[in-house]
Length: 288
Image (cartoon, rainbow, N blue to C red):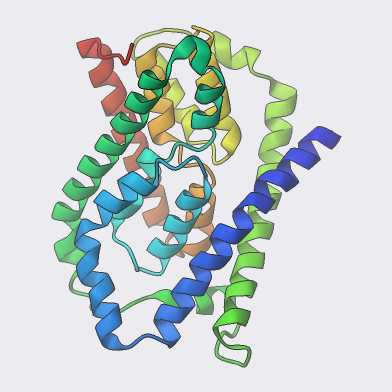
């Protein structure tokens, strides 16, 4: 139990810098920047999926958490959010690098590239379809997060106080949920997952996608280890890794007030991950 508590505290503590800087930037955009600066951010958003897909590949789940917060403030588009979620590597990269002596560096780079390309392509496609509807609302919604959290951002302290309050509330929420998830994983164990997933076509992708949706770094650890141990196909592995957005989903449900929209985003993420995995299974695509 002590290991569960320690892992939960460490994982949550790692997110603090990302969350604080994200909310600090959001408050700065809301309270300090001129309209021209806000318009520049909006115009630059058209390339958001490109930058999101590339930055998401960095081995930290903090980027997905940051993207979720920025989307809740409508600083980035839905396509950018999905691009980050799909390309997020989470704990996958450190594990693969630790096995580089038998796995190789080239396959690792290919996995990162595949995730980034799928994320970028899906992001641009989503923005092509949804962006015109969003364009009707020509304003930012960062203040809505403030109102939703009842932190009274405008009552003294400035943007620094507001950013600290948001960060603390989000971190406590992540800490609680991550602790509950870690308890479940601790007592359930990975052997059960091995028996469920294995190398079963279609079923493997469907179940791997569900495991990937677990909003915790542990999901990417389990999926990557199962693939390295040969009990999961590459297609199923990629499905789980694509659907896995780390704690980004937790932040999304906490910061974005529309639960219906959040559920739709999760289903979209899962659908894209499964579709990509099934396509890889059908074509026999692999990186080795």
